[in-house]
Image (cartoon, rainbow over all chains, first blue to last red; front, side, top):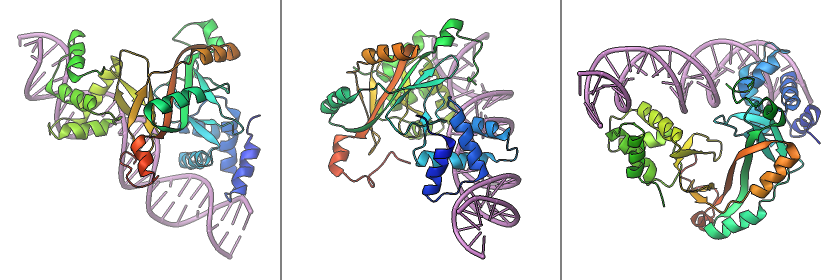
Length: 154
Length: 154
DNA sequence: CTGACTGCAAATAGTTTGCATGACG
DNA sequence: CGTCATGCAAACTATTTGCAGTCAG
């Protein structure tokens, strides 16, 4: 079950934040996309409908959403300022296609064994982890041409 | 076994790159540190001895080293432009202390099972992964004060 | 109404590029 | 000696901040 723009809006309200058309537009853009989006990308997307929305507002909204844990960063490639809707209901990780940039997520993550082992070895008190897999998605495997047809890449 | 400045220098030479005093200084700074360093941090470190080294040179050297696979990025916190000496001899991952920023690494990583499972589930052809654990290192646990005594944090 | 939100513009930070000089091999 | 590397300055890009007007509640 995914988070919808409406649900996020409700969260915002319940936290005492206002639900403005701009924020709504940004929420729609983020929830509609399966990919990770940079601030600029979100801005462009949103601008199609709300021409005079400021990039600044996008930044501020992203910050807010990240703070509330509704979106999270994706670390694909060198780009570390891409954001993605979060699945709040469960722990999950990302699977990033190096061909087209699509992000899938998966939940079958059991690192607790490894976490314990590493913790024992190093003495660290581990409280979280970051795990991402990189590879080619089904359709990019068919195309199987490393260059060309890359949409997300800079 | 860690990579030393000397060894990296040898690699550079063998690849046809020149071994200049500036590069040497940068290599020493990187190999001497157990932490992840940002370009600016490297620059400052290096400057203590070589006052008129340019930040630009640091950037260019980092780029070169990353290209040769001698250093790698660390994705701790929001900062994604920190670099660390690589252990070229084996696959490993990072363990980042959220207290002081120290980076340890560990090698007991067996994700192949999970990789296969995820691959089967999603149809992705997985070729690499990024795994980092976050937590508190031994000495930060003793201090156990989440604020204060934080050196690496912005 | 009132304070939070927005948009603009300017400020700041981070990174890249062009070019003349200098040093490596 | 020729070429690659450096350092400076300027160009760019990405992000943050200040402020006055606007709008959600």
